[in-house]
Image (cartoon, rainbow, N blue to C red; front, side, top):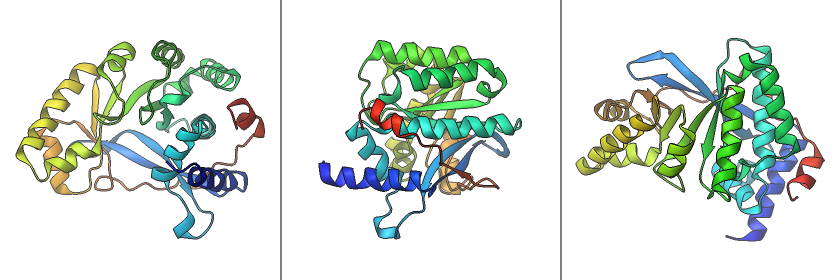
Length: 265
């Protein structure tokens, strides 16, 4: 990928973060057939800086930050904001993403994990979604890091399962609470009977690995029906719940330039 383009995208993100122009919206994960039952709400980053044509969305800035080795700054900032919200709202159940590149300990992560150990009621309402769009640099270190989070009381989800670098070995090692099937499987099942069968078989496999299985990318009643036929018990997508801001909005204004220095910026 183009290094200059990645740097441009990363600078847009950091500028928005410093200027308080990055915020979180939250999309619910709901039960199949009972949309009022919410497993938790996932935090999604939105930028408001700059004209729309130059304002990168997560599909752009997350991979760019991963390629530059700066995704840990984003992950820590988002998780800190989510934990702050959980501490002031005892009814909230929230989730946020952690890149595979973030699954190693350092001083900043250690302090946040200690905070969760002190507040187990907060940790119990936090689900951390591990995204393997980048490969695990150190399998054993990642497992140790995840087990620390689980010991603190956090629930672990594997995001976009079946795509990217996700592996059965990692799922077996960490025993996640939630597995989220990548949206491509639901979307392929719209057009192809054999793809619908693959979705069913993948869902059956996921059910042996985690108690909660989520179908991602649900956009219509047709997608809901496909997920039901595959015995997928939980759903996420614009067809079951739009990403919405909290009131008051949750801005990502937590920024410390030491993070960039510590993590390679």
